[in-house]
Amino acid sequence: MSDVQHEQIVIIGSGPAGYTAGVYAARAMRKPLILAGYQPGGQLTITTEVENWPGDTEVQGPDLMVRMREHAEAMGARVEEDHVSKVDFQTRPFKIETESGKHYTADSVIISTGAQAKWLGLPTEEKFKGFGVSACATCDGFFYRDKEVIVIGGGNTAVEEALYLTNFASKVTLVHRRDSLRAEKILQDRFMKHPKTEMIWNSVLDEVIGTDMPLGVTAAKLKNTETGDVTQIDTHGVFIAIGHAPSTELFVGQIDMKDSGYIKTQPGTPQTNIPGVFAAGDVTDETYRQAVTAAGMGCQAALDAERYLAELEDEKSVETV
Image 1 (tube, rainbow, N blue to C red):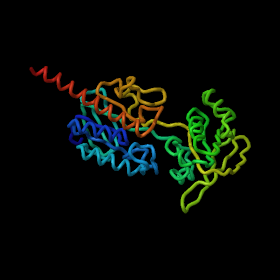
Image 2: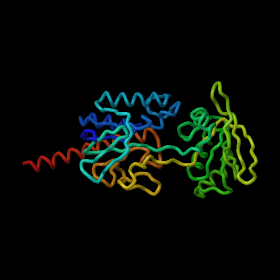
Image 3: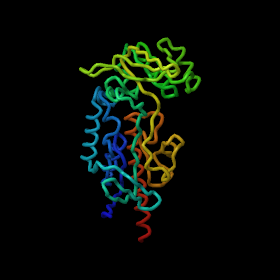
Image 4: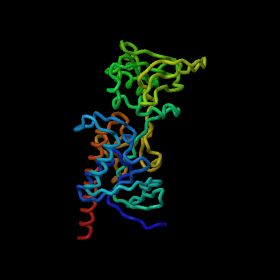
C-alpha cells in the first residue's frame, strides 16, 4: 500500500461546484485537494456556447471550466486528474482511495461529482451532441429562436423542457414512446393547450439526420413502437429529456440518499447526514441543475467546511489545555 496523504479538505469532483469550493477553501488557507475525476470540469466541458453565466455574454463551456480551474489553482487549490474508487466515511479522518492507487485521509470532504443527462445511446445522437442535439433546454433553447425542435421523453422533465422551448422555438414537438404521458396533469394540460406544441405518440427516436460541414441537425427519423414504421420529420434541434442520473454510485451505503439517487442534505445547507461531509451542485440538486447554482452551492460547502474545521480545532485546543 502506498503512503497515506492527509488533507484538511478533499473535494471529490470538479465542475462549477468543485472549482468554486476550491477557490473558497483555498482563500481560507485550507490548501484543498480537488480530485477532478474522469471528466475534469464536468458537463460544461461538452457544452459549446454558454450565455447564462453572469459576466459573460457568451463563453465556451470548456473555456469557462479552464478559467475556473486556473482561478482555483491560483488561490492555492491543487487539482489532481484522478478518479476516486473508494471512500470510507465511517472512520475519522475519512479515507479516500483513487484508481491510480493513491490513499488519502481527510478531515472534511466536499462531494461535487455532478450528474449526467441520460442519453439514448444512438450513434447519431453522439455525433450531433452540442451541434443540434442537447439535453438542456435552459442551456441551449435560445439558439433555436423561430426554429422547429423536437423533445424526446414523457415525464415531467420532458414536458417542462418542451414548455420552456416554446419561449423561443416556432414549434415544439414532443415525442413519447407510449400513448400517455407520465408528467403531472397540470403540465400535460399546459402543454396540450399551447399553440406552439404538437404531440407524437408511440414513437422513439431512431436516427438524427444532419450535415457534416458544418455539423448541424436537419431532421429526425422516428420509429413507431407499435407498427415499426419509420418516418422522417424536419427539425433544427433534438432535445433528449429522459432524466438525469446523479454520479453517486461511489457513495452508496456511505451516505444518505434520496430514492432518485441524489444525495440528501439538510434543508438550505450542503451538510449531509455525516458531519464534515458536504455535497454541492448537481449531485444533490435535482431541480435547477445550472452552473451558477452549482457554483453557489460550492461556495456554501467550502464555507461550511471551514466552520466545521475551525470548530474541530477549537475542540482540540480545549482538550490540550
